[in-house]
Image (cartoon, one colour):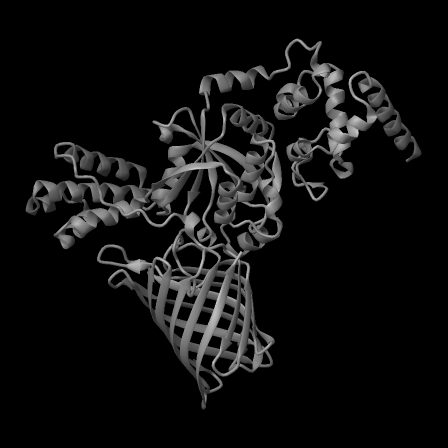
Length: 584
């Protein structure tokens, strides 16, 4: 051990002596603690968040920014030219800090990288936010990635820069467990943008918001230098913290010297919150809404008259059905059928040969008809206008009850839905107190109320895992779920769910019941009516009728009013409740 420390000490002494001609020992220490150097190493709270030992020139177990800086400088002074391609972002920064170090160096660029950048000519960067996908719990938070463009006229051929966990896991429980506790490795990757559109807009039916960033050519180059040195390098992936959206912030931090976006995300990184952080930092200059294929299909359906013929045609692709339609209606039917066919193929419900054969048949007929009128698709509220994901609530009722709740994420049935997906409600780790005593803790509470219509028939569902008081008395561990239907009623949501649950505590209880409601959201105001009735295996019945309204006082504050009557067994209670919501 003494021998090893002697070698390390000798090495450091040699390095300091070697660098003394252009940097003092004190200056070396200051340089290693420079905020930009720490960003290049993804250092946060004194530790690098990059877990791959291949990223470092020093031993990862004994890593410090100073040792890594010394090792980098040693590579340069030793004439190891491979360091220029391995760490182009480091080299670019060191050139600005230690120009004397490179004075006698002939070529300190990575030729392969520079040729690629010269060929691709990246000139614009866009932050893309695929909105939540209502029928998938894993996608209900949304996602973010970057798009690199040569010009603004051809975004579809841009390059999508993504960060994601590498997994082939199909078991949902294992996927959730590993995702929560860092069981997967996350990597940066590049993919053609049109393929990402296919994945999110067509396969998952998700709207996409594109936020153009005001990065200069130099800032883009610095970001791409760093991305290049992260190729094939992994960090442990955590669903709530070090996820897709959080790790993109490192790239933006590198692009702009004075930015420190990652510092604001220590406990959770909800995708829309990271987009808000990027907006607050002054990166966003404009935005564009790209509707999903489902929105296009819904827009076509609004103007067709023969729904039954259209439905039969999109199921059978029988061209004889078009004989009863005029040319305009036939064009809409074919457009809808082509979109449906592509969706079916994306879900692997059609063989490749059958898909190509049917698609060519439809396109051939469609090419002979007139061009359809532009679709009228209403742009929804920008997600940046929505409330923040964390919430603290404090309420007082007409019977002198005091309620307190804290929720890290993200939106429940009482929150204003502006900027969110209507009918998608998801709570994680929501803690509630009633009468100053612990009342419940929701590990996860998801409700997906996807609207059905004459063409689309999604199911609505709910799932909940929680510690909860049964009959407002005893604490039980709860597993519950439900399934039902939801419909659009004059731009409002009406729904009904059949729900059941198992409660584990001092004994085991089961329940079965029905939940229904009506919800209307209009700009800053939301109101609704909720009803549920449950039958428990201990013979107790519970039911509730509730009328509520929520209106925004500001972007971060809302007021919720409820009037309800509850019945638990023979106990009957009427109450009015006033609750203040604070979002942060």
